[in-house]
Image 1: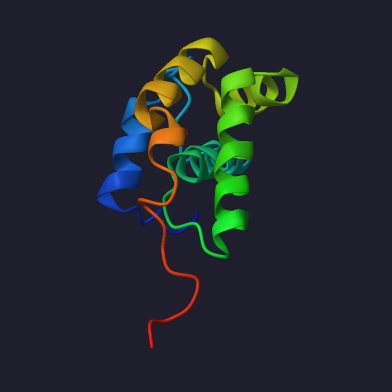
Image 2 (image 1 turned 180 degrees about the horizontal axis):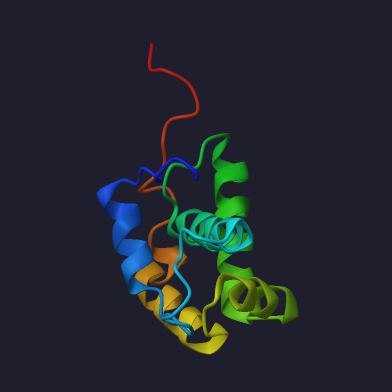
Length: 117
């Protein structure tokens, strides 16, 4: 038995928007599935520009790499979705709707890389 996952309201919204391909498998029951779901949520968070730290160049690069991974939907993305028990095409479509166009949001949702003086 593991400790229940604590999620922010925004992360809970990300989870709710992801389509389920297998409603009969309890999400919290399988560690591998939880890991793959965490990979997807991290990519969605990064592509959205949420809580990325570092220099502006590093933040933009991280955001655009995550967005490209989701948008391209290559075999790695499809495998992660399958291991998470999600339909890759529906997940990609819903994730892109949630993210929007990162070119319009780069720099708006970042955490500062160091405290203000």
